[in-house]
Figure 1 (cartoon, rainbow, N blue to C red):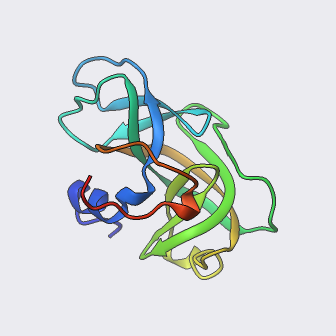
Figure 2: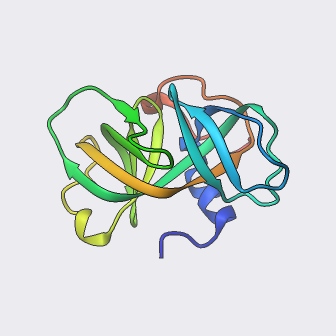
Length: 158
């Protein structure tokens, strides 16, 4: 099991919410389009009743890896190879259970198969990943991130 429910997931990982811009969508639709880290991604919103307004927001982006592997240090990136998918490259900044937080210029919470975690769940390791749809998105309330991923303190008050 990857999570105990949306509320527990958001509470545990909220410090890694990405600054995002949400785009307009059909009312009541769980499909959300957002610009995150300079890339437009399509998300399956997990924060029912799907009332997030268009504009600035903070979002936990949670794809499930179809591939994740260790790589040499390089350039951070987040791309959309085809609609509804993402791929990225970055440095691991946190890991717990089956979640690996990868700094691709913005934090991405990559869900992984247990077998792939041994080589990639080390803080500071560089990885690349590919993920298929659906990419889960959790809209988190609170202030925008004040600085880079590495220096962001946990702010439980917001």
